[in-house]
Image 1 (spheres, rainbow, N blue to C red):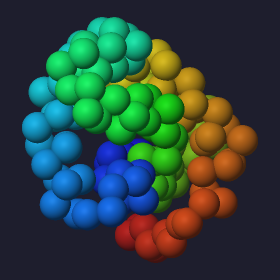
Image 2: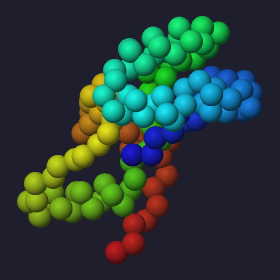
Image 3: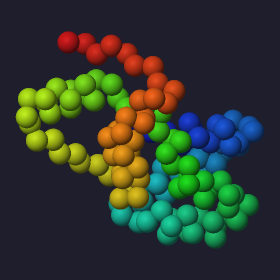
Image 4: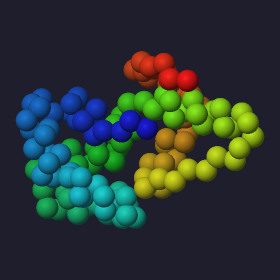
Length: 126
């Protein structure tokens, strides 16, 4: 999945520099990695909000608008999975995403909601 918090925060912040400051200094990659390691969104959000109350709303939106941080499936990967599934292979996934977010993604893919949003797919090489 093509996930990037900038996809959402560009619509939230009026200024690109403020968005970059927020992502580099508040909702950092290191902070997000702690959720990847198992900390819940609610715990991570609460921690940051106590440290940066001036960004309380923007921090909460990291969880609330997580789905809007997804741009698209990676087309060649999806094509390969469909081909393998069509050949009766059992498909398993390994991810570091939170239980709270992986369910959203699985539903979006399963019900083909994600491909209907702002997508342009490239042709996969054979």
